[in-house]
Length: 248
Image 1 (cartoon, rainbow, N blue to C red):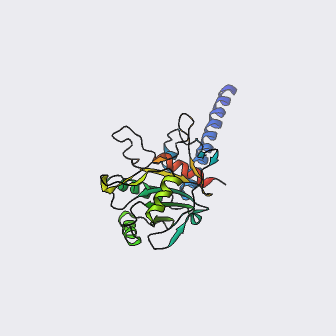
Image 2: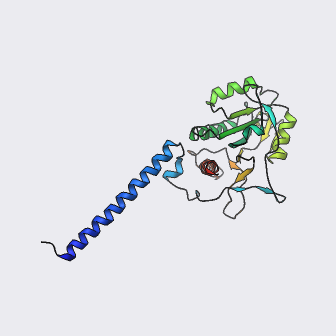
């Protein structure tokens, strides 16, 4: 017959086991909810330690930077403006369909974001061509078919080259130039900008407390690090999109 001390020890083990079981059931339920909502990204499974960083505002001259007004035709010849993105979290990039270098990688990374957040009606992408003389709506439509761009809120936009360059250089401070001896005839940045529902440009801070401003779009998650030793930032961008989507 077990003694009182033995009984107490046995009941303690039972109590601890019950607590562990209840916690496990709760954790599984939370993960299941996220999966059903399409909100689980790779870092829910294996955190990089960056998930807790805030997505702050990008400030210039003491003011929060906001996407300036724009209005261009998309791949379906529909006029799309910045106001069409109000209420949505979206990613901005500048590209061209005949780009022989970084654009295909950038587009594949954006398709990865499209597929990750496909359950969210308030997520979108705005891709501006820097070669609008060639990239007509019809050409942009073929580009969407080639890369599997299906999100109704992913607009590939074309219009007057001068207006697009002004948006890139003055609105986003992103490089966009026609350069004769550059690959494909154009020079541009491989960075993505993240915009919140109210049209403000957002980013997390780096290890020194300064905003990173843009997210590197030319390296895939699978690649990890490029030949120059730069790390991919798509995982980081996924985390920050998720946080902005959850903002009230």
